[in-house]
Length: 392
Image 1: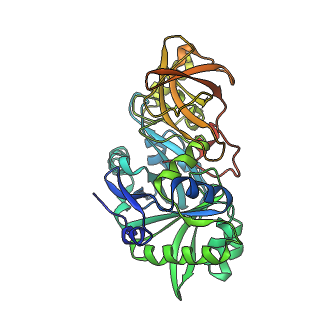
Image 2: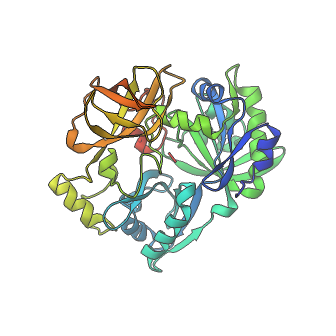
Image 3: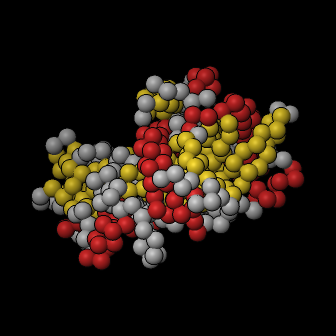
């Protein structure tokens, strides 16, 4: 398995490590519920060094990305970001992405860990030499700080002359800034984005600076959190946080057999431009005919006893199977089980409060359709898919 630059730091903190997409990653430190609540009430620190970072540059880079993705990255202003997707020729989702425009002729595409090689290869093929595509994943660390006190904690490390600009960062904005950690200056790309539904930031640095930055943020958080919780957060709480915020995960809610329209994310697809893009003809035809692949993503609250886990069948009470749960958990914030389910679009509409059943250990357990997100977002952070309401 691969390891991030912070692997030894996780061991020092007593993390329980697991295999995630071929990476040895921390699933929890103090415990999933405690870590989840820390982010909702204070702040938490995440190692996202397994994610993919792909730089696309050159005079034709914007046009190349417009052709490669379902959105129009060329329309971004420098210092702004957008949620996007890359699809195959028939519109099936290969990955969901965040795209940052970091200079006039330079963009950074952030992919999920399990798909970074696929995305990098597809971008190279679709650019056809018109732009430079460099996979910088192996040399880049990504650290996220999320939660209501995250801005104050991170600001304490920002160079004093840049703090006003830091506090001016809007949602889905990005800037190169300088951090002062243990007397040393670290250059970082700081984005006001996240995957938790809380205000937060994602910080990109060279691997050589990852440990110093991680330790600096932990130290700052311990003194600036103003009595609210602050701690390192594992993948377990990251999953419960993103699910409460209604954010889909590739491999669960998103997969190649589905189009963006099948998961409530058709708004990401920019069909109102004259450009051509891979998968565009198929998606345009389906949109014009109102066709889907036959699926729709629905939020569920379990009202009976049990937790709806991935793969469990969902049906109307006593009826035929409508589909399966894609993600499910007991919500630490709400105090009851929640889930997202991939259901038959032909049986729609699914209205809030409508009764359903989830087969848990072979028994039908009462559930109901609910709105997504499951919790009101504390900010407009998160990936824009948090609005389908959405990573990853």
